[in-house]
Image (cartoon, rainbow over all chains, first blue to last red; front, top):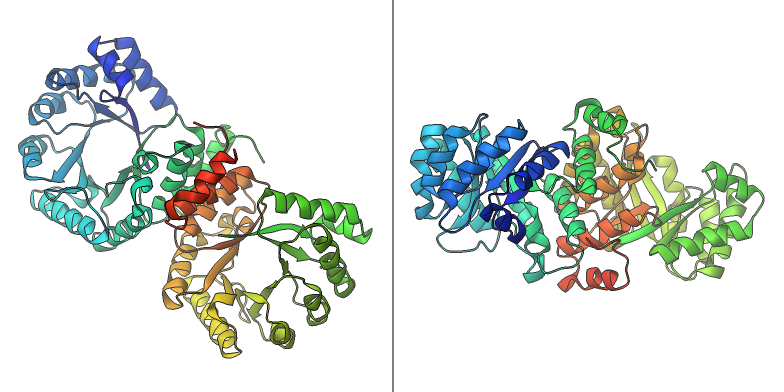
Amino acid sequence: MLIIGELINCTRKKVGEAAEKRDEEFFKDLARKQACAGAHMLDVNGGLPEQEVELLSWLVDLVQEVVDIPLCLDSADPEALTKALPRCKRRPMVNSITDEPARWAMLPALKEHRPKVIALCLSESGMPTGVEDRVATASRLIDRLTAEGFALDDIYVDPCVMPIATGSQGKSLLTTVSQIVAKYPGVHISAGVSNVSFGLPVRKLLNESYLLLLMAHGLDAAIVDPRDPQLMMNITAAEALLGRDANCKNYLRAYREAKLGDVA
Amino acid sequence: MLIIGELINCTRKKVGEAAEKRDEEFFKDLARKQACAGAHMLDVNGGLPEQEVELLSWLVDLVQEVVDIPLCLDSADPEALTKALPRCKRRPMVNSITDEPARWAMLPALKEHRPKVIALCLSESGMPTGVEDRVATASRLIDRLTAEGFALDDIYVDPCVMPIATGSQGKSLLTTVSQIVAKYPGVHISAGVSNVSFGLPVRKLLNESYLLLLMAHGLDAAIVDPRDPQLMMNITAAEALLGRDANCKNYLRAYREAKLGDVA
């Protein structure tokens, strides 16, 4: 399970304010804390208006001063990506390509630097509504990316999680994930799960539970807050339960390192 | 989601000792605590050697003095069932019929009293090993029970959870559940999940997580310890996420009743 830390996101108010001030210690701290909590990769979003091209590269350089895990560049700006991708010391990921024609302006940068790519199930016709349109969008994205030379193993489909408070897409997304995995064996499935709980109380509980429901259908990557210990424990347990942790080795190591909470 | 409290089980050492002494307060307390924690039904196992026929009925009478939820009679003894079933004030469940010929000695009692029935995926050939034998056993049990007049809605298939420490059946059980639900729409799926964690540390975490993985594939009943607040919160969240809680009504009620833990 690839755990992508979500906290370095300048579209969040407090993070954006620190970015405006170019507060180096703030971002170094966010990077260290997430790596220490078990993130395998850090999402880096420098999306301040008019500043993204410079800010994304500033963040990439800064974060790499303090942690040695790869980065997920969260941007759709071709110029920002062109400038930031070559600065990455380890093979990065880009978050995200979609089925909207304007997004494909990033294709030359992707082809030059060959990062891993998140393929988000969004199309020209707007927000997805069910299983069929999501699977159709995912198929178009996968087919086009593989035609451009990307391996299935480099593609992370994001089914586009929506708030359950505004409908009942929670279940249909599980079917979507199953169908994509069955149609394209070897492709990865990633998601930003926290959208699911928008508008409801105790969001942490919903996010933690939804991640397990998605894992049960094949999700193997997620953009999450790795500082949530219950979430991280759930992931460790689910990997063992799903046979993705041979002989429960990681589970037992986490136990010895006292990362599984109070012993029941 | 039907939550069946598992604690009144005389095959457990401490409970068995209380049963030997016919300690009324001990059992009344266990019954009250589980009902209060949110159990919808209580499993009652009076399996002490040579005492089951008398003990099961004693437990049924005693538990019904203090709680008004239905009981799940956990016995394969036709005489014990014949004596205990008519004492149940609310429609009970029987745990369990299997595909072993000796078990079907309980059929006359089942046909006379028409309880709900747990159909456990165990056959003459021993412990199940994969998807195919479990689905085949489930099919034989469902076909025979429906031929004997039981509605699909009265049948709870238990796929027979095994310890992941001794193999990797965790994932195949999810496939089993999906296939049974697809083949027999309307049948229920129940499980005693705690077997899954046998031999591993922090069993509570594995049980909590496995229940969610099974729910993602269609499980709608479980024999569990309802006094585990994380487990109960996970179930409430998963029901909302799976569209089994219209407008998140139960989730929001649990929140108002402060049953969703510390607010994040």
